[in-house]
Length: 173
Image (cartoon, rainbow, N blue to C red; front, side, top):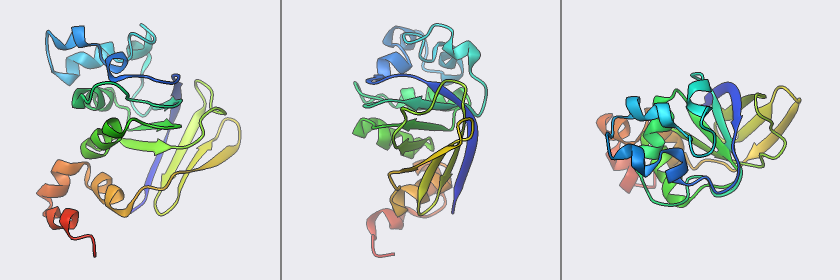
């Protein structure tokens, strides 16, 4: 199944760690992502969360989601209405948490995308990221068939709920 997204680019830099995504101090009071989304990326830009619109796409440099393996970093991004992060690279744990929670992690060159550009993502066998504002397109690192299946289901919990658990252990089909 193909995934098609289109949204406004929200550009951040390299080495955005999970504590930048949602600060540890904020998690002391609550783990409710609906509350925490008000503080999304406040260490990077204190006005970021208030300016997010549903459908926005985070565009990052290298090593997005580094630091601790907090799943809440992904769920706060999703709670803000952001369905995808496009980055040059991800920390392995953030990438896995993103897939497991239904957040689309796309790896490609991002240096040509500017804040506010309209970005389109087409993900099936091939993954293409297009900057509609600049008329450019770049082929992204492909998603494995298993990752696509989990994302198509809406994340790992839904994947298992749909009875596809055997697909995780039987790689032949």
